[in-house]
Length: 110
Length: 432
Image 1 (cartoon, one colour):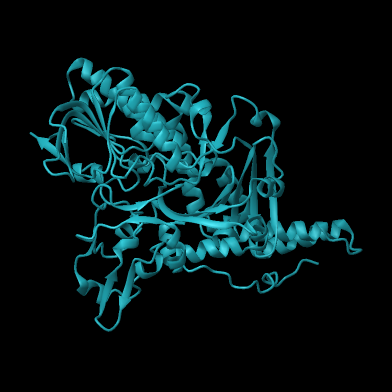
Image 2 (image 1 turned 45 degrees about the vertical axis):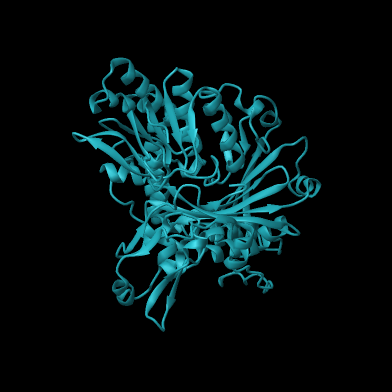
C-alpha cells in the first residue's frame, strides 16, 4: 500500500556542510583597501529590522549582526558582487555599487 | 583614458556587450568596450551551457575556435524527493556530432576569447574600468562617467550590457529596482574530478557531456532547480531559486547548495571531487512583461540588463548574444542616419520582435507565472509521482488494479482531482 507517512529521511548522512568561509579560500579577490563599495545607509533601520535577512541570504555572509554595538558589520572584502543584498534588504538600506575597476572578485572559472 | 569620441560605447564585456562590440567593429564603427573586471569574464557566471546555433549568428563557426568544455549529447531531468527520484532524459548520438547543439563553457575562459575576437575586429577594449553613470546633454545620453581619473567618455550611443543588476538603465530612469520575486539567486561550485572518473560516472565517451536539471527536493520545494553539468575535468554544480523564496524560507544559499550536494542521488556523482571555486550570481526572471523599456535617446539595453532570460530552457546567454547583435545593428542604422533619437532607436524593439526572443519571452512569462502560482509543482507533485512509481514497482502480491486505485485515492487526498484537472489545464495553457 502507499505509504501514508512521508518517506523516512535519508539515513542520517554525516553533515559534511562546508562553511562558506572555507570555500572562499579558493576564490580570488583583489581588495580595494581604500573604501567599501557596500554601505549601510542608516544603521538605525537595522536595529528595527526584525529578521535582518541580509545576515542569512547573502551567499558569502558579508553581513553580520553585532549585538554588542547594535549594528551590521559589512565584510565587503569577500563580496562576490551578486547584488542580492541591494534587492533583498527590506528597507533598501544598502548603498550598493560595483568595486572600483579591477578590484573585487576575480573568477578563474565562472 | 582615451580623449576621443566614439561612435558607440558598450558597457560590459559579457555575451551581450561583446556581441555588440564585435558586430559594430566588423561593420567599421568606432567602438569601445568597457569592462570592470581584470579581464572579460572575470566577473561572469552562468550555469554553464551555451547553445551553438544562436551564437553562429554572431560568429559563424565560433565553436571550432572557442574554449568550450564538452558538447552536450544528453539532457536529463531528475525529480527528487528526500530519498528517491523520478527521471526522464534524452540522449542522442547526433548531438555529439558536428555541428553540435550545445556546449558547456566556463565564462572566465569563454568571455576572454570572445572579447579577443571583438578586439581583433577593431573594438577598443578597456578593462578594470567601472562605469559610474551616464553623461547627459539636453536630456539625452551622450557618454559615460568611468571610475578612472578624467574618465569621461563620449559617444553617439551607449549600449548598456552591464548585466542583471542593470544599474545604468536605472540611472537613466528606464526602470527602478527589481523586486526580489523577479530575480533568482544561483550559487554554484566547480568540482574537479579526473576525466576518466567523470566519463565513467556519467556514461560519457568521445568527449561528450551531459546536463542534469534537478527539481523538487533539489530546491527544498522552492521554485527553481538544481543542476549538474559536465565540463572537461570538472562539474558545474549549483542551485537557483527565487530570491524572495529564499528570503522567506530563511535559508543560507551555501546551505541550500550543500544540502543539494548531500542528497543521496547527488552525493554519489560528486564523491571524491575537489571543490575548486564557489560563486553566486543573480538571474533575471519573469519574462517579457518585466522587460523594461530597452531604449531611449542615445541609449540601448541588451542581455540580462534588459531581463532577457528564459530560465526554463537555460536561455540567457543566447538572448544576450542576439540582443547585443541587434542593438549593434540598431546603432549602425542610427550612425548611418546620423540620428540617435529614441525614435530611430525604437527599431531595436522591432528587431527583437522579428527574432525568437520576444516570442519566447512571452511564452516564458506564462510558464513563470504559472509556476509562481503553483508552488505544489515543486512540492506535492514530485512526492505524488515518486510514491506512484514506488507503488507500481513494488511487487507485493496486491493486484495491479487495486494498486492503481490506491494510488488514485492517495493522490486525491493530497490534491483533489478537480484541482489536479485545473493544474493540468493551466499547465497546458502556459505552454509556450
